[in-house]
Image (tube, rainbow, N blue to C red; front, top):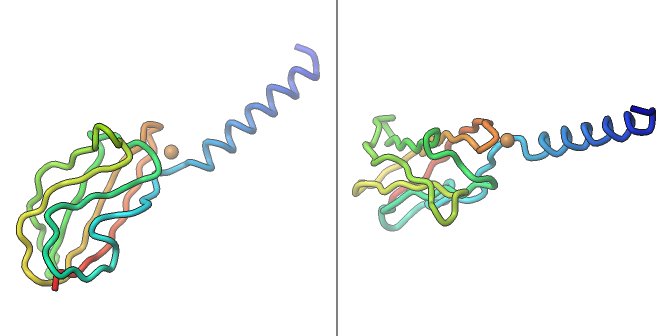
Length: 121
Ligand SMILES: [Cu+2]
């Protein structure tokens, strides 16, 4: 390998490294219910939209009421047509403040988690 080739390979490696850092983790882009929203009626589902495709086996949505008691939810599903979205249905919720906690993993093996709240009037 001559010197020019080595420089070219190193430049490519650096570019690849920069690209993987730039899209390092799944970021939540939007959600239903939206963060900090006050809803007139209880939501029937929680849907979370991300910037990258999600691994269903490592994706989870938990819901807690104002007393931090867990609301039992069905297993989360990643949309077949939109693998950047995961969702679950929710039982009928009484009025109050709820917090959503989510964890997920993208196809590159990076895990991400977050939480937000919404209020049912
Ligand atoms: Cu990543």
